[in-house]
Image (cartoon, rainbow, N blue to C red):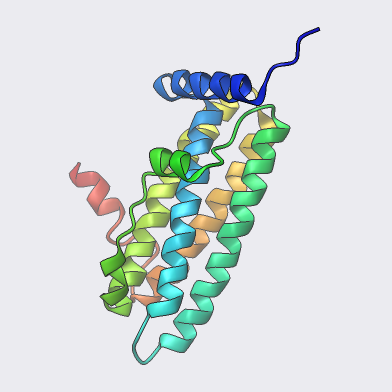
Length: 182
């Protein structure tokens, strides 16, 4: 009996990931979500450190709670993927390659309102991947993954509503209208 080396196992993983990302699977789509959570956590950390203004202390507390939630979501989602015999991105290179959220160091100089609005759009972008992954998980008969993703969608929707309220907006204001223009 031959044992595969770590190099061969990783080589097979990378090859399969490339295939999966060209023919989307629930695992591949969820890998994008995990990667987006890594970028989102970086953005929340920066926001927590640098937000300024009259509401800075309250926003720092909120961003801290969202940051902790994001860490927990990433860990739980990665665990679900592994439990489902799927692979989760696990290196900075993979996170960078699969994430669709973007970060920029200059954002730390933006206004609190701008930062909150940017986070709203990040959660909305994240939901685009979550809803696609739910559909793929249902199609692939992966109810545990689908159920977990529905919980993530619920949390994201709640975060959007909370952040939008800070901006004086309804939960979908400025988001669905943008979708209709596409």
